[in-house]
Length: 135
Image 1 (cartoon, helix red, strand yellow):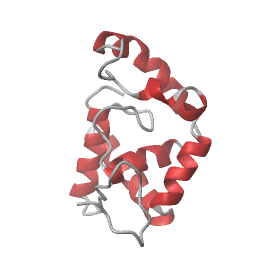
Image 2: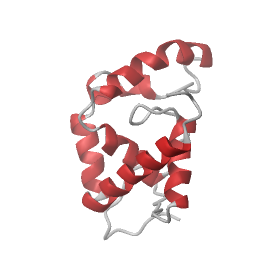
Image 3: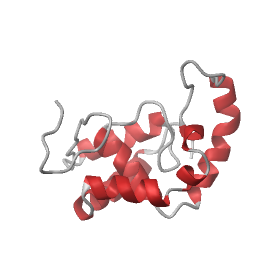
């Protein structure tokens, strides 16, 4: 998959995000991703790109990104990870579900085009449905 995804691929992934959204609450989604995600077992900081104040650079990210994305390919919670990022708007600086931030935003846009968008802009952690969301 290239950096710019085909529209049908983004649309297909948006449908999968909507299916996850409709079947799992956000707090449960976050818990499952943290518990079962391959990234959490392999040092989750590797999935964040160009971390400010670190020795990581865009060049390093370009070289190593494929390694992290390969780990995502075999992850049991890949769709849930992507869904968590897209549904909470956390698509700026890290790999989720094996997709680069620009690809995650394409899925987010496809979800909006389908009329399936229910985005929750939350604080630093996902909040339960019964808790007020940060605006």
